[in-house]
Image 1 (cartoon, one colour):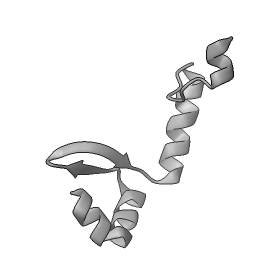
Image 2 (image 1 turned 135 degrees about the vertical axis):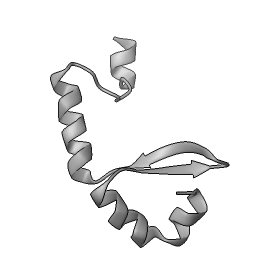
Image 3 (image 1 turned 180 degrees about the vertical axis):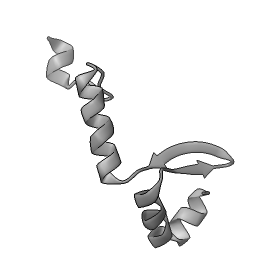
Image 4 (image 1 turned 60 degrees about the vertical axis):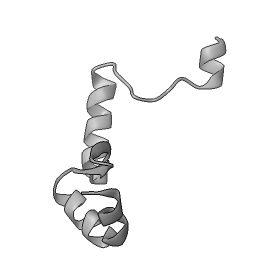
Length: 64
């Protein structure tokens, strides 16, 4: 789905993302993926269990 389509059909984007991940493209290149909150939570929990996290370290963690 293009960014323009996502903007103009936001309700459809939400409905579709609840059923399956939706890649949003700008200039024909994927830039983000929209997923249902349940899928995000599942992926986040899986990442925590495997010791991987996509979160950047806080300023305090970087300074040690």
